[in-house]
Length: 404
Image (cartoon, rainbow, N blue to C red):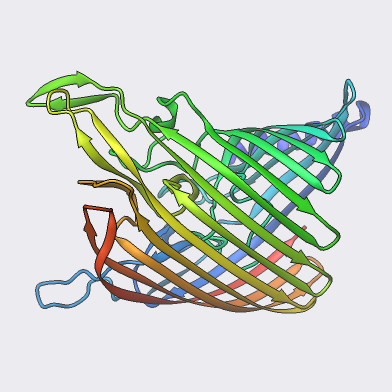
Protein backbone atom coordinates (compact mmCIF):
# COMPACT_ATOMS: atom_id res chain seq x y z
CA UNK A 1 0.00 0.00 0.00
CA UNK A 2 2.88 2.37 0.76
CA UNK A 3 4.24 1.84 -2.74
CA UNK A 4 0.91 2.76 -4.39
CA UNK A 5 0.37 5.73 -2.07
CA UNK A 6 3.85 7.03 -2.88
CA UNK A 7 3.27 6.54 -6.60
CA UNK A 8 -0.08 8.34 -6.47
CA UNK A 9 1.45 11.25 -4.52
CA UNK A 10 4.36 11.43 -6.96
CA UNK A 11 2.01 11.54 -9.94
CA UNK A 12 -0.05 14.32 -8.37
CA UNK A 13 3.01 16.39 -7.58
CA UNK A 14 4.33 15.80 -11.09
CA UNK A 15 0.97 16.84 -12.52
CA UNK A 16 1.15 20.00 -10.40
CA UNK A 17 4.49 20.97 -11.93
CA UNK A 18 3.49 19.96 -15.45
CA UNK A 19 0.15 21.75 -15.22
CA UNK A 20 1.82 25.11 -14.75
CA UNK A 21 3.97 24.58 -17.86
CA UNK A 22 1.71 22.83 -20.36
CA UNK A 23 -1.78 24.31 -19.84
CA UNK A 24 -2.99 21.52 -17.61
CA UNK A 25 -5.58 22.18 -14.91
CA UNK A 26 -6.29 19.74 -12.11
CA UNK A 27 -8.52 19.44 -9.06
CA UNK A 28 -7.80 17.24 -6.07
CA UNK A 29 -10.72 15.80 -4.16
CA UNK A 30 -11.53 13.06 -1.72
CA UNK A 31 -13.29 12.02 1.43
CA UNK A 32 -12.68 10.51 4.83
CA UNK A 33 -15.57 8.15 5.58
CA UNK A 34 -16.43 6.04 8.61
CA UNK A 35 -19.18 3.42 8.68
CA UNK A 36 -20.63 1.73 11.76
CA UNK A 37 -23.18 -1.02 11.07
CA UNK A 38 -25.26 -3.70 12.78
CA UNK A 39 -27.16 -6.67 11.29
CA UNK A 40 -29.64 -8.85 13.14
CA UNK A 41 -28.58 -11.99 11.16
CA UNK A 42 -25.96 -13.27 8.72
CA UNK A 43 -26.22 -11.95 5.16
CA UNK A 44 -24.95 -12.41 1.64
CA UNK A 45 -22.29 -9.72 1.43
CA UNK A 46 -18.76 -8.68 0.52
CA UNK A 47 -16.17 -6.65 2.46
CA UNK A 48 -17.15 -8.45 5.66
CA UNK A 49 -20.56 -6.79 5.76
CA UNK A 50 -19.91 -3.37 4.26
CA UNK A 51 -21.35 -4.27 0.84
CA UNK A 52 -24.63 -5.74 2.02
CA UNK A 53 -26.96 -7.73 -0.28
CA UNK A 54 -29.73 -9.74 1.43
CA UNK A 55 -30.24 -12.12 4.39
CA UNK A 56 -28.98 -15.68 4.19
CA UNK A 57 -31.33 -18.65 4.31
CA UNK A 58 -31.88 -20.64 7.47
CA UNK A 59 -29.29 -23.35 8.14
CA UNK A 60 -30.00 -25.64 11.09
CA UNK A 61 -27.61 -27.35 13.48
CA UNK A 62 -28.12 -30.77 15.07
CA UNK A 63 -30.53 -29.27 17.64
CA UNK A 64 -32.59 -27.43 15.04
CA UNK A 65 -31.14 -24.00 15.76
CA UNK A 66 -30.63 -21.56 12.88
CA UNK A 67 -26.87 -21.03 12.48
CA UNK A 68 -27.44 -17.82 10.51
CA UNK A 69 -29.66 -16.24 13.18
CA UNK A 70 -26.68 -14.44 14.72
CA UNK A 71 -26.19 -10.69 14.93
CA UNK A 72 -23.02 -9.04 13.61
CA UNK A 73 -21.53 -5.58 13.19
CA UNK A 74 -18.32 -3.62 12.79
CA UNK A 75 -16.73 -0.22 12.12
CA UNK A 76 -14.72 0.63 8.98
CA UNK A 77 -12.89 3.46 7.24
CA UNK A 78 -12.15 1.54 4.00
CA UNK A 79 -14.16 3.86 1.74
CA UNK A 80 -11.92 6.83 2.44
CA UNK A 81 -11.15 8.14 -1.04
CA UNK A 82 -8.59 10.15 -3.04
CA UNK A 83 -8.89 11.42 -6.60
CA UNK A 84 -7.80 13.96 -9.16
CA UNK A 85 -9.65 15.48 -12.14
CA UNK A 86 -7.42 16.75 -14.94
CA UNK A 87 -8.20 19.13 -17.80
CA UNK A 88 -5.61 18.91 -20.57
CA UNK A 89 -4.75 20.82 -23.74
CA UNK A 90 -6.83 20.25 -26.86
CA UNK A 91 -6.10 17.27 -29.10
CA UNK A 92 -7.04 18.69 -32.48
CA UNK A 93 -10.53 20.08 -31.91
CA UNK A 94 -11.26 17.86 -28.91
CA UNK A 95 -11.16 19.02 -25.30
CA UNK A 96 -9.26 16.49 -23.22
CA UNK A 97 -9.79 15.42 -19.62
CA UNK A 98 -9.01 12.51 -17.33
CA UNK A 99 -9.85 11.12 -13.89
CA UNK A 100 -7.98 8.87 -11.47
CA UNK A 101 -9.67 7.82 -8.21
CA UNK A 102 -8.82 5.25 -5.56
CA UNK A 103 -10.02 4.04 -2.18
CA UNK A 104 -8.79 1.51 0.39
CA UNK A 105 -11.44 -1.18 -0.09
CA UNK A 106 -9.03 -3.77 -1.49
CA UNK A 107 -10.46 -6.80 -3.31
CA UNK A 108 -12.11 -10.03 -2.27
CA UNK A 109 -11.11 -10.70 1.35
CA UNK A 110 -8.08 -8.38 1.22
CA UNK A 111 -8.98 -5.10 2.92
CA UNK A 112 -7.18 -1.84 3.73
CA UNK A 113 -5.24 -1.89 0.45
CA UNK A 114 -5.39 0.59 -2.41
CA UNK A 115 -8.07 -0.15 -5.04
CA UNK A 116 -8.62 1.56 -8.37
CA UNK A 117 -12.15 3.02 -8.66
CA UNK A 118 -12.02 5.25 -11.74
CA UNK A 119 -9.28 5.68 -14.35
CA UNK A 120 -10.31 7.11 -17.69
CA UNK A 121 -9.60 9.73 -20.31
CA UNK A 122 -12.20 11.65 -22.26
CA UNK A 123 -12.22 13.42 -25.63
CA UNK A 124 -15.02 15.95 -26.12
CA UNK A 125 -15.81 17.50 -29.53
CA UNK A 126 -18.95 19.29 -28.29
CA UNK A 127 -21.79 17.06 -29.44
CA UNK A 128 -19.85 13.77 -29.68
CA UNK A 129 -17.47 12.56 -26.96
CA UNK A 130 -15.40 9.43 -26.36
CA UNK A 131 -14.50 7.90 -22.99
CA UNK A 132 -11.76 5.27 -22.64
CA UNK A 133 -11.08 3.58 -19.30
CA UNK A 134 -12.79 2.37 -16.13
CA UNK A 135 -15.83 4.08 -14.67
CA UNK A 136 -19.44 3.29 -13.71
CA UNK A 137 -21.18 0.59 -15.75
CA UNK A 138 -23.82 2.20 -18.02
CA UNK A 139 -26.55 0.21 -16.20
CA UNK A 140 -25.58 2.09 -13.03
CA UNK A 141 -25.80 5.27 -15.10
CA UNK A 142 -26.89 8.72 -14.01
CA UNK A 143 -29.84 7.49 -11.94
CA UNK A 144 -28.86 5.93 -8.61
CA UNK A 145 -30.24 6.09 -5.05
CA UNK A 146 -28.96 8.66 -2.57
CA UNK A 147 -28.61 6.39 0.47
CA UNK A 148 -26.01 5.73 3.17
CA UNK A 149 -25.66 2.01 2.46
CA UNK A 150 -22.53 1.49 0.39
CA UNK A 151 -24.29 -1.00 -1.90
CA UNK A 152 -26.17 1.97 -3.44
CA UNK A 153 -29.33 -0.09 -3.71
CA UNK A 154 -27.86 -3.37 -4.98
CA UNK A 155 -29.13 -5.96 -5.80
CA UNK A 156 -32.11 -3.89 -6.99
CA UNK A 157 -29.81 -1.28 -8.57
CA UNK A 158 -26.99 -2.50 -10.87
CA UNK A 159 -23.61 -1.76 -9.26
CA UNK A 160 -20.32 -2.09 -11.11
CA UNK A 161 -17.36 -0.10 -12.33
CA UNK A 162 -15.85 -1.60 -15.47
CA UNK A 163 -13.29 -0.93 -18.24
CA UNK A 164 -15.13 0.37 -21.29
CA UNK A 165 -15.10 2.28 -24.54
CA UNK A 166 -18.07 4.63 -24.44
CA UNK A 167 -19.33 6.95 -27.16
CA UNK A 168 -21.83 9.71 -26.35
CA UNK A 169 -23.66 12.03 -28.71
CA UNK A 170 -25.71 15.07 -27.61
CA UNK A 171 -28.60 16.14 -29.83
CA UNK A 172 -30.29 18.99 -27.99
CA UNK A 173 -31.88 17.61 -24.81
CA UNK A 174 -31.30 14.02 -25.92
CA UNK A 175 -28.07 12.13 -25.25
CA UNK A 176 -27.33 8.85 -27.04
CA UNK A 177 -24.83 6.32 -25.72
CA UNK A 178 -23.11 3.21 -27.02
CA UNK A 179 -20.55 1.29 -24.98
CA UNK A 180 -18.37 -1.82 -25.19
CA UNK A 181 -17.66 -3.08 -21.66
CA UNK A 182 -15.24 -5.59 -20.17
CA UNK A 183 -14.90 -6.93 -16.61
CA UNK A 184 -12.27 -6.29 -13.94
CA UNK A 185 -13.34 -6.10 -10.28
CA UNK A 186 -16.98 -7.06 -10.75
CA UNK A 187 -17.23 -10.48 -12.41
CA UNK A 188 -19.80 -12.86 -13.88
CA UNK A 189 -20.70 -16.10 -12.15
CA UNK A 190 -20.22 -19.46 -13.85
CA UNK A 191 -19.14 -23.09 -13.42
CA UNK A 192 -15.97 -21.97 -11.58
CA UNK A 193 -17.65 -19.25 -9.51
CA UNK A 194 -16.81 -15.60 -10.17
CA UNK A 195 -14.19 -15.31 -12.91
CA UNK A 196 -12.96 -12.97 -15.62
CA UNK A 197 -12.31 -15.93 -17.92
CA UNK A 198 -15.94 -16.22 -19.11
CA UNK A 199 -15.89 -12.87 -20.91
CA UNK A 200 -12.17 -13.07 -21.75
CA UNK A 201 -12.61 -16.36 -23.59
CA UNK A 202 -15.83 -15.12 -25.14
CA UNK A 203 -13.88 -12.44 -27.08
CA UNK A 204 -17.08 -10.36 -27.12
CA UNK A 205 -17.47 -7.44 -24.69
CA UNK A 206 -20.75 -6.47 -23.09
CA UNK A 207 -22.65 -4.06 -25.33
CA UNK A 208 -24.91 -1.28 -24.02
CA UNK A 209 -27.04 1.09 -26.10
CA UNK A 210 -29.13 3.77 -24.39
CA UNK A 211 -30.71 7.20 -24.60
CA UNK A 212 -31.50 9.92 -22.04
CA UNK A 213 -33.72 12.98 -22.24
CA UNK A 214 -32.54 15.77 -19.95
CA UNK A 215 -34.86 18.69 -19.14
CA UNK A 216 -34.39 21.44 -16.58
CA UNK A 217 -35.34 19.17 -13.65
CA UNK A 218 -35.96 15.84 -15.31
CA UNK A 219 -33.92 12.97 -16.68
CA UNK A 220 -35.75 10.11 -18.41
CA UNK A 221 -34.05 7.28 -20.22
CA UNK A 222 -33.85 3.65 -21.28
CA UNK A 223 -31.25 1.17 -22.46
CA UNK A 224 -30.55 -2.37 -23.59
CA UNK A 225 -27.55 -4.48 -22.55
CA UNK A 226 -26.10 -7.67 -24.05
CA UNK A 227 -23.65 -10.00 -22.34
CA UNK A 228 -22.19 -13.03 -24.13
CA UNK A 229 -20.07 -15.46 -22.10
CA UNK A 230 -18.12 -18.68 -22.67
CA UNK A 231 -18.78 -20.81 -19.56
CA UNK A 232 -16.31 -23.60 -20.49
CA UNK A 233 -13.79 -24.49 -23.19
CA UNK A 234 -13.33 -28.13 -22.19
CA UNK A 235 -15.22 -30.91 -20.43
CA UNK A 236 -14.42 -34.27 -18.89
CA UNK A 237 -16.52 -37.34 -19.74
CA UNK A 238 -15.50 -40.69 -18.28
CA UNK A 239 -11.98 -39.39 -17.55
CA UNK A 240 -11.59 -38.16 -21.15
CA UNK A 241 -11.06 -34.46 -21.93
CA UNK A 242 -12.99 -32.89 -24.82
CA UNK A 243 -12.77 -29.44 -26.34
CA UNK A 244 -16.20 -27.78 -26.30
CA UNK A 245 -17.66 -24.64 -27.88
CA UNK A 246 -20.11 -23.13 -25.36
CA UNK A 247 -21.78 -19.72 -25.22
CA UNK A 248 -24.59 -18.07 -23.26
CA UNK A 249 -25.90 -14.77 -24.64
CA UNK A 250 -28.61 -12.73 -22.94
CA UNK A 251 -30.28 -9.33 -23.15
CA UNK A 252 -31.35 -6.99 -20.33
CA UNK A 253 -33.41 -3.80 -20.41
CA UNK A 254 -33.64 -0.78 -18.12
CA UNK A 255 -35.85 2.29 -17.81
CA UNK A 256 -35.07 5.11 -15.39
CA UNK A 257 -36.33 8.51 -14.30
CA UNK A 258 -35.02 11.25 -12.01
CA UNK A 259 -36.39 14.57 -10.77
CA UNK A 260 -34.15 17.06 -8.96
CA UNK A 261 -34.84 20.48 -7.43
CA UNK A 262 -33.26 22.50 -4.60
CA UNK A 263 -35.38 20.53 -2.09
CA UNK A 264 -36.36 17.28 -3.80
CA UNK A 265 -34.61 14.24 -5.24
CA UNK A 266 -36.96 11.59 -6.63
CA UNK A 267 -35.52 8.71 -8.65
CA UNK A 268 -36.66 5.30 -9.84
CA UNK A 269 -35.34 2.50 -12.04
CA UNK A 270 -36.71 -0.80 -13.33
CA UNK A 271 -34.58 -3.61 -14.77
CA UNK A 272 -35.63 -6.69 -16.70
CA UNK A 273 -32.35 -8.47 -16.09
CA UNK A 274 -30.89 -11.61 -17.62
CA UNK A 275 -27.63 -12.97 -16.19
CA UNK A 276 -26.43 -9.66 -14.65
CA UNK A 277 -24.31 -11.19 -11.87
CA UNK A 278 -21.37 -8.97 -12.94
CA UNK A 279 -23.49 -5.96 -11.93
CA UNK A 280 -24.10 -7.14 -8.34
CA UNK A 281 -27.57 -8.45 -9.19
CA UNK A 282 -29.26 -11.80 -8.72
CA UNK A 283 -29.57 -14.27 -11.58
CA UNK A 284 -27.42 -16.50 -13.74
CA UNK A 285 -28.12 -19.33 -16.18
CA UNK A 286 -29.02 -23.00 -16.17
CA UNK A 287 -27.96 -26.09 -18.11
CA UNK A 288 -30.70 -27.05 -20.60
CA UNK A 289 -28.93 -29.83 -22.52
CA UNK A 290 -25.71 -31.91 -22.45
CA UNK A 291 -24.03 -33.69 -25.35
CA UNK A 292 -23.61 -37.25 -24.11
CA UNK A 293 -20.39 -37.81 -26.08
CA UNK A 294 -18.38 -34.60 -25.47
CA UNK A 295 -20.18 -33.21 -22.43
CA UNK A 296 -20.78 -29.90 -24.23
CA UNK A 297 -23.55 -27.96 -22.52
CA UNK A 298 -26.13 -25.47 -23.77
CA UNK A 299 -27.70 -22.92 -21.43
CA UNK A 300 -30.81 -20.89 -20.72
CA UNK A 301 -30.51 -17.51 -18.90
CA UNK A 302 -32.38 -16.82 -15.66
CA UNK A 303 -34.52 -13.65 -15.79
CA UNK A 304 -35.24 -11.26 -12.94
CA UNK A 305 -37.38 -8.15 -12.59
CA UNK A 306 -35.96 -5.50 -10.21
CA UNK A 307 -37.31 -2.06 -9.36
CA UNK A 308 -36.58 0.65 -6.81
CA UNK A 309 -37.80 4.10 -5.73
CA UNK A 310 -35.85 6.71 -3.75
CA UNK A 311 -37.28 9.97 -2.34
CA UNK A 312 -35.08 12.56 -0.58
CA UNK A 313 -36.20 15.95 0.76
CA UNK A 314 -34.42 18.94 2.27
CA UNK A 315 -31.10 20.77 2.29
CA UNK A 316 -29.44 20.71 5.73
CA UNK A 317 -31.59 18.00 7.29
CA UNK A 318 -32.53 15.37 4.69
CA UNK A 319 -35.02 12.61 5.47
CA UNK A 320 -35.15 9.90 2.80
CA UNK A 321 -36.86 6.63 1.98
CA UNK A 322 -35.85 3.79 -0.34
CA UNK A 323 -37.90 0.76 -1.42
CA UNK A 324 -36.79 -2.08 -3.68
CA UNK A 325 -38.36 -5.27 -5.03
CA UNK A 326 -36.97 -8.20 -7.06
CA UNK A 327 -38.85 -11.15 -8.56
CA UNK A 328 -37.26 -14.29 -10.04
CA UNK A 329 -39.01 -14.94 -13.38
CA UNK A 330 -37.26 -18.25 -14.06
CA UNK A 331 -36.00 -19.54 -17.43
CA UNK A 332 -37.64 -20.04 -20.82
CA UNK A 333 -36.39 -23.66 -20.98
CA UNK A 334 -36.23 -26.68 -18.73
CA UNK A 335 -32.93 -26.65 -16.80
CA UNK A 336 -31.09 -29.18 -14.67
CA UNK A 337 -28.61 -27.00 -12.78
CA UNK A 338 -28.10 -23.28 -12.21
CA UNK A 339 -24.95 -21.14 -12.08
CA UNK A 340 -25.31 -17.68 -10.60
CA UNK A 341 -26.13 -15.57 -7.55
CA UNK A 342 -29.27 -16.09 -5.48
CA UNK A 343 -30.67 -18.67 -7.89
CA UNK A 344 -32.70 -20.20 -5.01
CA UNK A 345 -34.34 -16.84 -4.17
CA UNK A 346 -37.88 -16.27 -5.44
CA UNK A 347 -38.21 -12.61 -4.40
CA UNK A 348 -36.59 -9.86 -2.37
CA UNK A 349 -38.20 -6.85 -0.73
CA UNK A 350 -36.35 -4.03 1.01
CA UNK A 351 -37.28 -0.72 2.66
CA UNK A 352 -35.02 1.91 4.22
CA UNK A 353 -35.50 5.15 6.11
CA UNK A 354 -32.67 7.55 6.87
CA UNK A 355 -31.92 11.01 8.16
CA UNK A 356 -28.74 12.93 7.33
CA UNK A 357 -27.35 16.24 8.51
CA UNK A 358 -25.55 18.06 5.71
CA UNK A 359 -23.15 20.98 6.13
CA UNK A 360 -20.32 22.25 3.90
CA UNK A 361 -17.85 19.32 3.59
CA UNK A 362 -19.75 17.24 6.15
CA UNK A 363 -22.46 14.57 6.18
CA UNK A 364 -23.65 12.75 9.30
CA UNK A 365 -26.39 10.17 8.98
CA UNK A 366 -28.32 7.23 10.38
CA UNK A 367 -30.18 4.64 8.27
CA UNK A 368 -32.46 1.73 9.13
CA UNK A 369 -33.07 -1.02 6.55
CA UNK A 370 -35.42 -4.00 6.61
CA UNK A 371 -34.93 -6.72 3.96
CA UNK A 372 -36.78 -9.99 3.42
CA UNK A 373 -35.75 -12.83 1.11
CA UNK A 374 -38.01 -15.70 0.04
CA UNK A 375 -36.06 -18.95 -0.45
CA UNK A 376 -37.27 -22.20 -1.96
CA UNK A 377 -36.50 -25.04 -4.34
CA UNK A 378 -36.21 -24.80 -8.12
CA UNK A 379 -38.88 -26.10 -10.47
CA UNK A 380 -36.65 -27.53 -13.20
CA UNK A 381 -39.39 -27.19 -15.82
CA UNK A 382 -39.12 -23.37 -15.83
CA UNK A 383 -36.38 -22.40 -13.37
CA UNK A 384 -38.85 -20.72 -11.00
CA UNK A 385 -38.63 -21.02 -7.22
CA UNK A 386 -41.44 -22.84 -5.40
CA UNK A 387 -42.30 -23.88 -1.82
CA UNK A 388 -40.89 -20.64 -0.45
CA UNK A 389 -40.27 -19.35 3.05
CA UNK A 390 -38.99 -15.94 4.11
CA UNK A 391 -36.11 -14.73 6.25
CA UNK A 392 -35.51 -11.12 7.28
CA UNK A 393 -32.71 -8.86 8.47
CA UNK A 394 -32.73 -5.58 10.35
CA UNK A 395 -29.77 -3.36 9.53
CA UNK A 396 -28.57 -0.10 11.07
CA UNK A 397 -25.89 2.09 9.50
CA UNK A 398 -24.30 5.23 11.01
CA UNK A 399 -21.98 7.25 8.78
CA UNK A 400 -19.70 10.25 9.24
CA UNK A 401 -18.31 11.74 6.02
CA UNK A 402 -15.86 14.61 5.49
CA UNK A 403 -15.25 15.69 1.89
CA UNK A 404 -12.52 17.88 0.48
